[in-house]
Length: 108
Image 1 (tube, one colour):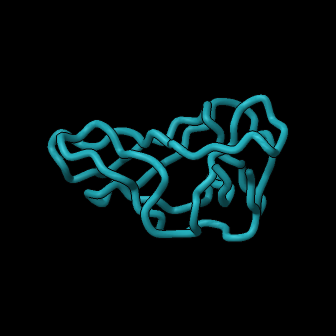
Image 2: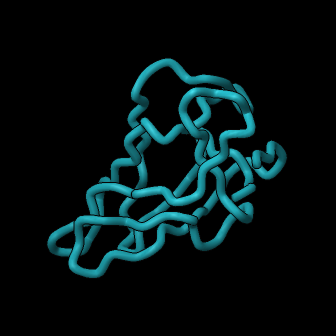
């Protein structure tokens, strides 16, 4: 599914206000706005979740292979609002909220 390419400088929260912190799995395949593009191999860790038990990560559902990399790149259907993934770990999992991201680079 097409969407806006996600990068390490974006801002995303879990439904309980925890903050997403990307942990790269290796060198980035590309940069967007000077920041590493997020791929399917990267871990999207959640810190500061107020739920008990807390959200620990985000599983992303929307990926693009159009950019020609061996690993799919994470994309978001719209530049903000409800994210195209699920926060997991808590008893009330839900979609993350995209607070800020780049709205220019698009992948299919």
